[in-house]
Length: 610
Image (tube, rainbow, N blue to C red; front, top):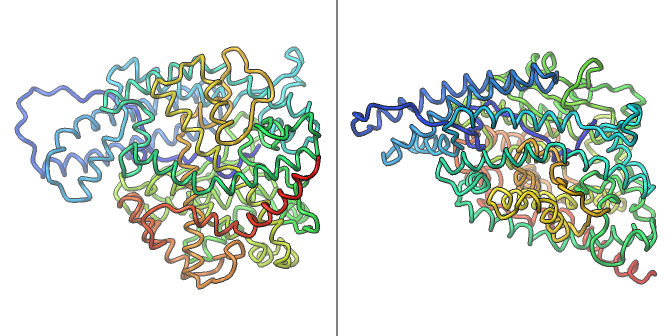
């Protein structure tokens, strides 16, 4: 089973993920006779904290790896226990760190002290145990979920991968609707666990001085939480006109395909018609949206199958892109330790993810690779995480992380933007480079993947911020979820809401408690990075035709930013590669400018049809 490249979970050792809202507990009791803290004491405290957290984080990461690559009750328990041990240690550190807040520390130490406190605190052992157990259970329930159209017949049961195949390939509205409803119903089974998890998470945020977990998440971005919310809204408004043009074109073409009884002329479009379980990307619809006269296909799946290019070979192609930029080869342990294909003998979490096991060179990919264009792109994305890990491995433990979590997602996605026809021809997967006159089809396909995602990437955490703030009661989860999806995506539920429904929970990142704004940020940054690196490479043509493959100069610029890790605020890292210290969605508009003109012209003509 495979998921879209922007739906990956990035796995960090706990020490580097303290800033990612880890739950903690109360500090050890003191005798009340401590004197005023000193700078020397603070430095010693920070150094010891980093080492302790890194060691425990590595242990927790190993336990999580075993669990996700071999799902059993035992491995679930082991992962939960290892996580709880890490959280226990981290909590003592988080609250004890407050003792040094008024000291004037060197810049790096002050930053580390702040990162140590961007955390949840659960002071009761029972709360910590419940929190870690619920988190592990939620991830496991999602991974094991299946839709059985005939509950008494096991052969009728379909897992998510099989249901996604139906969503991608079927053009039967009834079959699509059945698969959509069948999967979304599964989340009801773990809604109660999620509600309890939210309550415990908020309790931990309160103990650390935050209004709620959503506020804590927004505080991770080197700016006040309210400023980050305003920044994401500003970026959404930049791209909204492009999305609106694409949405209208898709509506008009879907009406031609399914008829006016299925697709309304105005108002939200039923969610099951977009070729994707969550309507987050629409590229599976390309065959029915393809412009006339645009016969170019960048689908390399047939070539991969014809030449029997397996998962390891696909991964080596992706590695070759990074080494062509001057980056190091992957360590031999990567291929020995990674899970690149789905095992036949056990349950695993196939959701693709990159793992930095030991914060040094034991880096791994967990993915069930199939010989498809999607998975070929995905492995390029996942290695972006790995090469970021390797680039900052010499940083102190608390700086072994992305400048912000959106950076970590954007690194590999920037590389996928360079997977142009020219690149595919150079590596032997495309016979000839299509004429520039065929670019509209290629751009449309890319927009169905990238532009279509933007409102979904924005609204998932819009929903969760409201859930965590208490503005949305569990009974209203679906009501608010679909209000947001109609407002931003222009889609609607294909059937009446379920009693006690939990449609948001049908998306992996919700039960897995992975913040989602990172993916929206990543979609902005990847085009900004791409434009900057193309400029560094001396490229002056259309942005969609640029590939930095084999360009050492662009690679050196990229590597310099990657090596910073989280040692500097993200605007400084952004400036390192782009010369700009603010996120700017104009690069997306530049990239798709020819398509926007074409879409508006097409929409004008299509609107004349009945």
